[in-house]
Length: 284
Ligand SMILES: NC(=O)c1ccc[n+]([C@@H]2O[C@H](COP(=O)([O-])OP(=O)(O)OC[C@H]3O[C@@H](n4cnc5c(N)ncnc54)[C@H](OP(=O)(O)O)[C@@H]3O)[C@@H](O)[C@H]2O)c1
Image 1 (cartoon, rainbow, N blue to C red):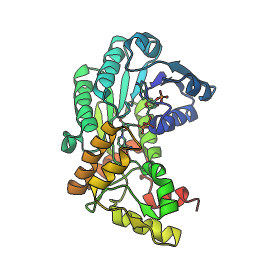
Image 2: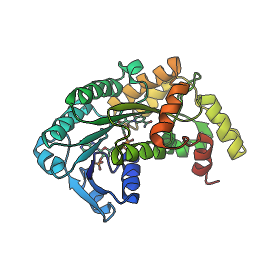
Image 3: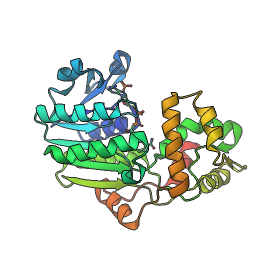
Image 4: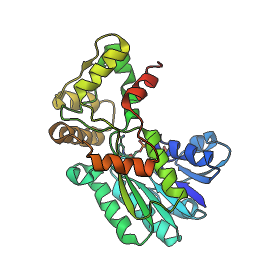
């Protein structure tokens, strides 16, 4: 099998590429950037193209048998996801693994989550064999906040008090690899979650304990968050992330025991613990 990884230069896709290479699988990776194409491992076939440009689709989609569908958050997410699905079907792909989000039904009003509900539905109706993976908030998002945590002693991700069952990107990669190289997970949808639910305050307490000094939670003020973040990321992204964090603050995103079992089934082992991730993050 030759696997096409859309988003293969990103956080999740990169981990999936490493996992597939470790199993001796053939991998093609899409990137928009000639520079990133040159930096890929030698045994990866790089494909330079753009999911917003259908003139590059023949080059992207010909020559693979399976596809990992990762669509970056963007205003064109639905167009990119549905077009990739159409091209996979046209080119006779044998399997699609889609990276969605945990419990998407509760977040239909958040643009990137609503897009995923539509793409999931289209995948199920396409007739192509699929596995849908629904990961919670990634542990690795903390790398975005590293300077704020280390220099200002604040944990700034406004995830609220209810709790969210965050997950390690390496577990998502393990699940995707298992779904690609075996037929054990065909036409199934799995929540991908960590073993514990974390609130903003319990996260700050964990960092305080491991760093030996007080790390404060940044709090729930989404007006202040939006004013700050729209200066650093595109305003449409700050706008929709605000709505997502308001959802986390009101409803949380906690896994059920059944969802934790689902995770173990497809990942093939117990999910990695957040405490262990934070120790690695801090170099301990
Ligand atoms: N962060 C979380 O906590 C979380 C939780 C659940 C689900 N998710 C979902 O995970 C996905 C993001 O994964 P990630 O964090 O691994 O992404 P990422 O690190 O931001 O990487 C984005 C990838 O998308 C590619 N890309 C962007 N625009 C493209 C285009 N027009 N054509 C082709 N490729 C394009 C980039 O390739 P080049 O730059 O090389 O072109 C890169 O490989 C999103 O769908 C998000 O909603 C995230």
